[in-house]
Image 1: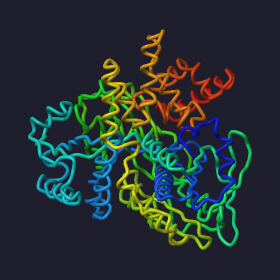
Image 2 (image 1 turned 45 degrees about the vertical axis):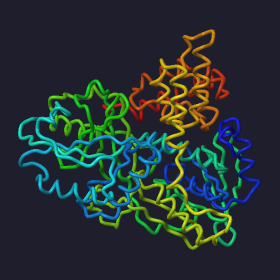
Image 3 (image 1 turned 60 degrees about the vertical axis):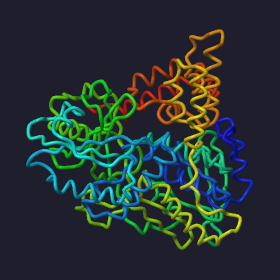
Image 4 (image 1 turned 90 degrees about the vertical axis):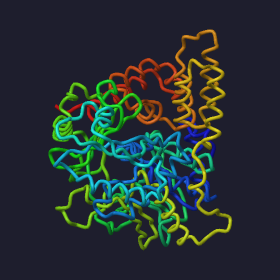
Length: 545
């Protein structure tokens, strides 16, 4: 399968491909876990397919804290193994995929008679550096009171003794998932969204799945030697289709995040602090033109699906922030966007344990029918979780001499750093006035941005230079990233985190003509999707009353 045919118009051909061959592996679930397994299998030369019930990264993997981090707080809980793995994966991605995984400084302010004593912080940071093999992006350092206030002038100055500056990384989680998935497609994997599994096919063991195309209503049987359940919060449902309850007790932890405009936040760097209400670790992370603030963390006894931000979640976050940093005056009126997500955590049955104390390690189960299920894990460690899952798959299948060993620790996603830099430099020389936009494109799409930039320059040098260059980006994602709805386009492909609801709707209305053309929508179909997306924004991304 080629990325050129990874689009809505090619869905009939994709479903034919899914039904006309037997796969080595069928992955159910298009979040970061499923996408990572899919890519790893494709790079090894396996015949692999992936099906997703909704859109790629539309659940947990598009509603995370958007951090690729070493897990500093795991050290406090003595989760040294997970912290070691997280640190090494973060450093690997910064080295291999720095266009996507961006290292940034984090500042943790230190107060007299509050929080951890300085000596304990020094010890903790040395352990953190050691777990990273002393190979972090930059070595941590302790700041004076004046240095800390220069980076974060809105901090409460009373009792402030200084701060600790260290490096972790931020990422656009839905973009990261899409790029991982596309790389699997580019290496001959077959993937499709809006194709829920309705039944597991069985011979002597699980031998594939029946799926339904949500766009046409047609059903298809996909045959595979091994089926992997990587559906996150929906994992129990797939195991029930297997006819048995899950062995591990899963619970849903809900996290809510708020987005503020960069201009409204009196900080020049990311700040990590403990909530004055309950001591939970919170962060204000600096992203492109905005700060992402989060996260609440509590158990929610409900069915999986998209969680709605609750008044208590927003009140907790804003109260914590204004007690910690009152001079910033970041109230409800400053919130640009809000979202909530579920984390599927594996608990030991202890209902009194807090979500923050439950391990983020992955769990892999193989049922008697040979359904492989993976749960837990983190955005940061998804690559190594995928390698562990495929180790189990190979045990079931037997090793094929045609399959390569795992190479995901060596192969950059969307081009090497050097090739990406050279290609970007070419277009910057060609059209210097669009330098900042070209940089955005290459961060998002890697070497695929070359196609977009060529079209952008053609538009710029054409008879209508006032035409907006973003039109070329919309064309690209619709033709190469399986966009099926307006929500897919704005929330998970070509939109920006700092856009509020009104801006998102405005961009859709502005680009209606080209979007309708690329997605083959009639005017009535576009308007129907526009109304549906408007309701989606009101329900899931607006501040609750």
